Length: 90
Image (tube, rainbow, N blue to C red; front, side, top):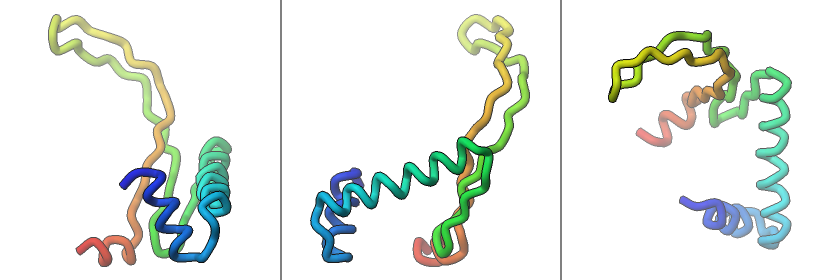
């Protein structure tokens, strides 16, 4: 499902105009992004939880050449689906 399809579905479900639904949609994900930037856990009731995890620096191997490559430490976004979402999918 594309972003435009999601926005159209939100507009239909809420009675908002597409422009209002777009602003609401964008604002929602901006708030989630800002929370993650601060290192906060962002739970969405009935959906799941977004979190930031730290990945340690490591040495990897280039599969083509076999050469060792250093991979820097970084942060990664993780998502854990909530029970309501899991049940809805199954």
